[in-house]
Length: 262
Image (cartoon, rainbow, N blue to C red; front, side, top):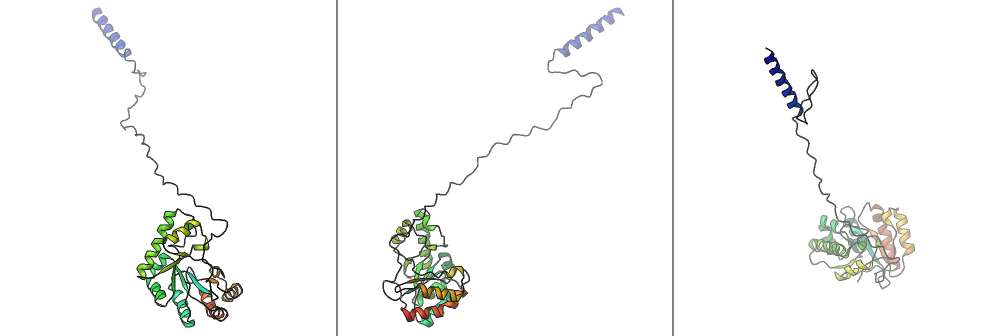
């Protein structure tokens, strides 16, 4: 019996020593809860994705302190010229054309490319009734003349293409910069495309929607022999301009005559 007890003691001591030989194992006290190993795999750390950034747009050139030389601002003769910007508009252009036909005078229509694309039939009527066409940019971008030369050329060429698609064989003699915000660069592009830069000498600011009497008074007061008068047949509600035109046209025709630009 004593031999058996001694043998059991030796075996128990051996088991204790073998457990202590495992440095990573912790022996919990009797009755303590045993930790449960998680079976959920660790969440992988997301790999960073490169941020896609657009290249910065080139800065706009500053506008010159004064208008560049070479702009067409007079007719060169005593009679004056009428110009209408920002069309063609289905609401206003046909009515302006009706008034010009009734007065037996012609005008220059400075057309916006995307409006030409939308209303080609009005461009054809303008040409058919003996009026001139002027490129007024694709979307009336006031900063167009300050942009890179390649952008200016693409814009003007696109507008000319739309005009000639609407009215094959139509001559586009002039270019007018939106807002009159000219730079030497846009002058160079217009010349390269065979267009002369068309400005004005009388601006009654009908784009600001004064009433018809104010438009007529401003034109009457500011007009001199050879003037180029700026009016609008598109770009918004032109009811006041339309109402002013019959008296305005009669007044200019009687005082100076109205001519076609050459």
